[in-house]
Length: 496
Image 1: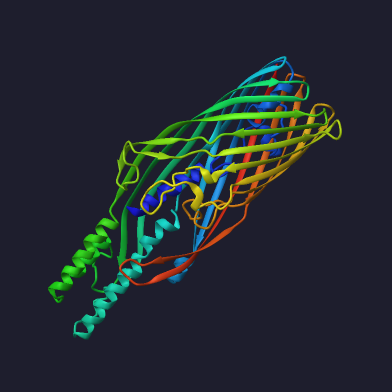
Image 2: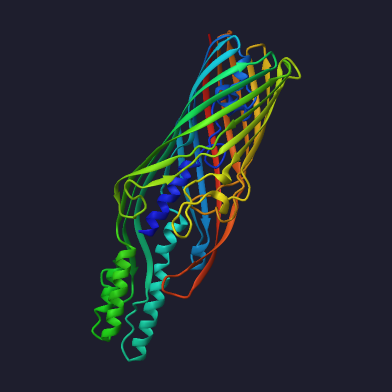
């Protein structure tokens, strides 16, 4: 049951951290972002999210934007634990997808005032499909083989020394199991704001985002089996670990105390390898205050800043089945979004050429992401994060023939986590992202954006150890974490 617990946690973490931005915050919030990666000083309609104060410099009238992104991510974990048992290292892969990732914005500009609204997926947005499990899932099962081999090998030796035949109880060759897990996480945000242009150079904005968080988990673990191919150990070959131990205990040549020990251990294995099911959802809400300022120095230089406050979110469990004891029905857990600062600058050295620069800084250390200490108490991120996460980014855009434009962008991100954070259940990697795309102005009322982004993550290797149950044997091994992400986006902006 512990293994199912661990795998579901991994599913939760992976789906929550699928997309672009900070540890739990999505910043990929428009099709224009997908082709540039740098929109913090935008003076267009996606400024509803990226630069709400910049809406004060748009033209009077109604402005609308609708875009969607399709996101694919592959997460790979290679563990050499199994090499220490005489086998090849095993690589686990999880395919995570977000076929629909919408961003919807509207703003109405009236002279010095602009009022805006938006809808986006501010966290999560993906579903996880673990087809082969995780190291922390399989290692406890795989360790049953050497544990039972060691215990029964000693028994075989004692019986041979006592003149009995070699029953070959130690000849346990393999293990098997069936597992199925699905999980999803979505943090939807509805945003409202007001912008005021103080003068021709300075505008300010205030607003807020109502966040609705929903997670779902469904999984099962069954049929944990081992295969004992000793000549007289188990006539049927495959058996549950508990049944195998009881079959050994049935040998009439064994003394009563040994029989009792074997039957006791068989009962313990029954509990450890019992079938387990899980079906649960979590939901909760939070509110994010937002302020912004924009300094429009000239048609060539625009500078902007935005602050989003820490969003406290408590999720409440709604549990139908929970054989793992992980989601007590009605229990509340924290799953915050961190505060963040976003800065940006847009430069237009030439009429057809523009450049953008920006930085996002996430206040991760002071948030609660559902981490717990050894006592099971929820703690903030001080023990798992050394430095707050950040990303910096830049882009270039060039417009041809007055209607067609091309763009390219680059971003670097570092999440600031320490070694205690990294595991196959939840790992964060520094990354380099490249992007490109096109935009087309269809008259003065319509702009079409299309973009592609590719995220390249640095590998991370972590030295670990695992102590075999009931044995003073510690196996040292290394897990290596990798992933990659591709994102496709298309959107339309309308100016009325």
